[in-house]
Image: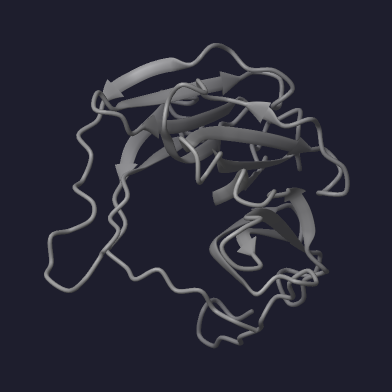
Length: 238
């Protein structure tokens, strides 16, 4: 609350039966709202996308809201992302967008797609989930950006041998989407890293941002690849 000079810690609650969470992402919305999404689980099944809402600038958060439920080993909503529309001249201020890497048939010919949900009332109600990517493709964590006038850009990469970077825009605040646009080919980082005795995961993620200035490139979208540092998967218990 003082520009980063001092910090406090808190543990966000989990739904009954859940034992841990990971892959948290945070976004801000005017005037004092913070939203956090996370991939939560009761073990190795039922991977669920949760949303936490704060109306006091992040001082406290309410009970978790289930945005995309998991179902056993059939559906796992991993690698979440959340974004609120804070475009300075957007007609959709406060629209809340949640994306996840929607993994299906995890133990049987597993697939992985990019899914999207929209809320226009701060996370209390949601539209039907939208499948952004081709179900025949394997994808990694989707990302999103909003420009000055509220245009929404979603992005993801495929992870097959001929990996590609895709962007799918929406000009109506996430109510509908244009067809996916192929941006570029992708050379994936090798995973797992060949380090004796370890199993470092190094995932290649899509990353997208939009110019929200009044400058000559207003509305331009910038696409990049985000390569996280290697890490050990850890399941915390509460």
